[in-house]
Image: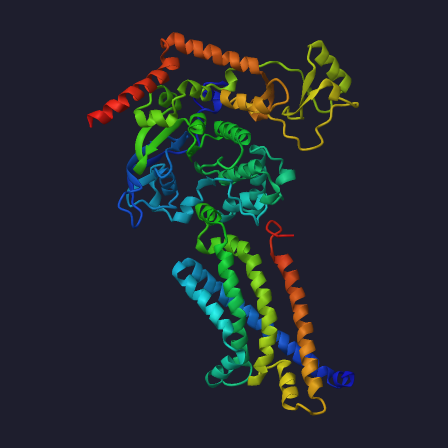
Amino acid sequence: MTQSTSSPSTERGDAVSGVEIVFDDIVKTYAGTSQPAVDHLSLTIPAGEIVMFVGPSGCGKTTSLKMINRLHEPTSGTITIDGEDIRAKNADELRRHVGYVIQGGSLFPHMTVKQNIGLVPGLLGWDKQRTAERVDELLDLVGLKPDRYRDRFPRELSGGQQQRVGVARGLAADPPVILMDEPFGAVDPITRQRLQDELLSIQEELRKTIVCVTHDIDEAVKLGDRILILTEGAKIAQYDTPENVLAAPANTFVEDFVGAGSALKSLSLSRVAEVDLYDQTSVKVGESVADAKQRATSAGHTSVVVLDEQERPVDWLWLRALQGETVREPADERDLITISQQATLNDALDSMLVSTHDGVPVTGAQDRYVGVATFSAVTSLITSKNQQAQETSGDAIAQAPDDADLEHATAAPADTEGS
Amino acid sequence: MWQFVTDRWLDIAYRSYQHVSLVVQSVALATVIAIALALLVTSYRRLEPVANFVSSVGLTIPSLALLGIMLPVVGIGTIPAVVVVTFYASLPILRNAVVGLQGVDRNLVESARGMGMNGWTTFRRVRLPLAWPVILAGLRVSTQMSMGVAAIAAYALGPGLGSYIFTGLTQIGGVNAVNYALVATIAIIILALLLDALLLVLGRVTTSEGIRVS
């Protein structure tokens, strides 16, 4: 997100709709345990940012999250949202103004997509018309065609689609704060990466305050404006931007947690937007096939990317597969793998593994086609990044992890001897 | 037997109506009571073994004996019949309602609370609809059983076809004894099947398409 605020979308930059959340000396002790699950946590979550809570299981990250919407009540301390103590209001009232997205979407199986998304607006007393419009708007936002999906039941959706609806449901009443509990834990890696990209582009537009719990450091690095790394008892190990967490881990706990492969981790910091995209010939649905073939051949291409009316890539065809009078939309719901400009290089490489072509189509704002990221373009960016890093920091990034490991290896026995 | 039926056609029809009416009303009452109890049981986990104990032991009490116990308390007529039928009808529903409500994914309940539904709304819009197919299965068992229990209730001068069976039994060897018992029994079987078919239809109408099995 730090990159995207400096991108052309700056005119939307000040439209922050999120609000600040402050934890003030929060303690949570569960009945029957002596160790507090959350031990004096004080924290400020800035308005309009995504803050990722990460840490080993049982570190109190989920408990901390659930205290924000009062699913858990702190034993002592106060939490304020936009300066207001969350206990000032009735808990149900509070929760209707805080979006909540949990793993797998947790859609209600007996309700249609429309009913699921319309739940909170319904609780807030919106009229039917307004709710229906909002549902369609949100389905569009998460990339599901309202006409096709509105009346489906959750079991008629794929895991990724369910999760999208889950996100739409969390956004339904346009809450300033959204809480996410391992939102993308239950889907396969490719789908997860797409959902993450979508969340980032939605966030670019909405600028909510999003608090997200994950155990996946890669996800935290990719999504977070800030990462909060917690140790047992929700003690803060480090609270900083992903760049700083990777470049300067505050202590050995953080270092171990983010992993030794920090040079590779920087793959998660570089975005596809930095890659030199290849201008693969694209054709629109409805265009004449002869024209399309002619354009592709003159550009020296043997395949074309097919776009729909909204210029979203829907298919990638070899020229010989282009038949008939005009270019048609793929008949079946074949999922063309695409990545957004916000995807990380890591994601790009993942996607290429399952692509049938040498590369993967990249989409920009509103999922519009912007070009193709080829394997060689991505690898050459990685190489040049690594070279840069070596030149600027005198081998620091490429060598540091190894040195650190060596130090650990030699230091560890010495420690045990000493004690 | 044909002669027997045509002679008493109106009386048989009226008693059938009474019989079904007794069962339907008692089962409806039992459903409300059982779901309320199940809600209590699922809120306080310690009550669960109690509920299971009551519903299994309850079913072993002979209905005739229970009726005998009820007589001094509520007298004879319709009221003891309703009490006894409701008591038996609530047991299978209670058991299924507890199982059904416990089977609702905890994440869904938490999700509902997290979205700002209060306890009652969560029950009405999430827990009950999701537990409904299981509760309905209990309702069907309970209705079938109640058709038979309602016949016993005639012993306390309750309404319905049961009195025909008792008439037949007391007149054993008499002219119409077999006719009385047989006609009432067959009528009860037919009515029970009809009610079950109705419940099947009710189930389809009231169960969300999203969780329907077939």
